[in-house]
Image 1 (spheres, helix red, strand yellow):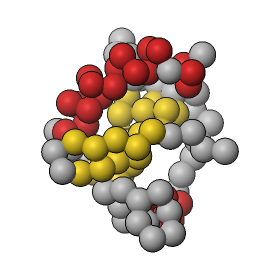
Image 2 (cartoon, one colour; image 1 turned 135 degrees about the horizontal axis):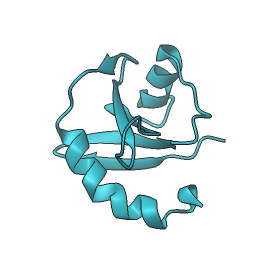
Image 3 (cartoon, rainbow, N blue to C red; image 1 turned 90 degrees about the vertical axis):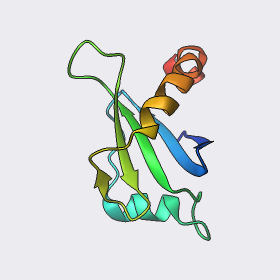
Length: 94
């Protein structure tokens, strides 16, 4: 089972997946299927939280609905800060 949160911001919707444990490995095809609005969850993209490589709380990667990874995505910082409290209280963190 894949645990996720569906969120929206600035007119876009996203699938947020907490992968700080590093157990989730999605390829382009799987990401595109999850984002498919007719046969999947439906979203403009996937925000994947990962374990940080520095002193941050987490690393965030954004994948477009076609499965390709975006290098820059300013809204993800806003969504990340908004969801930080959720992550601290979520059962995903326990």
